Image (cartoon, rainbow, N blue to C red):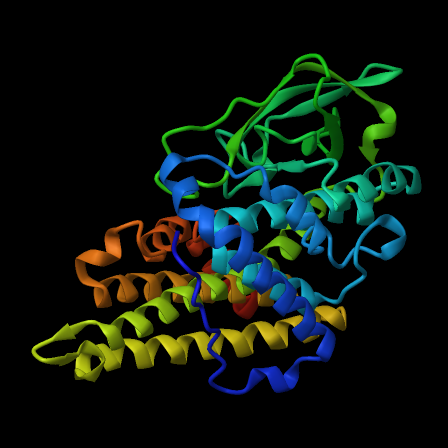
Length: 392
């Protein structure tokens, strides 16, 4: 079992911008990752199995709904704390961060923001404690980047709703207890519904044969005449803006999370370059290796500054969807480029499970696509600065 020797880079002394609470939250999460995730994650990825034993630990460190108020079971933390938690978890593995991100931003957030008080009290404390695990149903087999084209629908049957349709590429679905599902009513208006495992006609087949996010459980949501109680409708917001508001929160968490992946790849490459001897000296002494490492730390530092500022704007309620898109797109590309460069520093050893780099690289191939593809986020920025949508 390998020892986690990770040391976090902070080239611009960004810790000076953090509060003591921020640093305590980050350190607690980092220690948990070193203790619980690092020793088992390579085997989990090789075996393509989600390590369910981590769920209780994620709840204990406050990774489920950290910004949800304490009265509903959350930790009542700010947005920078949430980002730091996602960063440290993804330093361990993108798939484990996905589980926490979905639970927090795509399940707890919509129930908190769009749900009734009864729904908040019924679901949020159990989601925060890990007693319930949730998933988020938006993407469909025929509608990815165009969620407004969704075909999943529900009808008002008088004393209940009747739900039919399917969702695809759903993190947590194979073991989720509830799903926040987005569907169109008879007037073509999009609403969120809470669907519970055990409802007749509701199934969650698992997706297999993935080369990416192998330590994450991915699946489908199938609705075949599912009777959903009327009290399970989220009443306080409808339209496409409702699920997109959830995605803003999730994309913000991704922007922080992938910095963790990048830092892990950089730290691994830096340590290896000092230990690997070629031509009688460490490869860290060669110019091209120093170029790779210097560019890695530069890009990580830029991403850290970008997300810190975005966190401040989120705390102030001033961050825009377009600003979040820019950070998600920039930081995922940064992390993927660093993973590829770090793999080259390690040579052939970089493809083995003895090191985390290839696992991060494969995971990031999913992260660069989900919750808004790399290209779509670019066009969101383009639309924001020109006022002209290029994808319609």
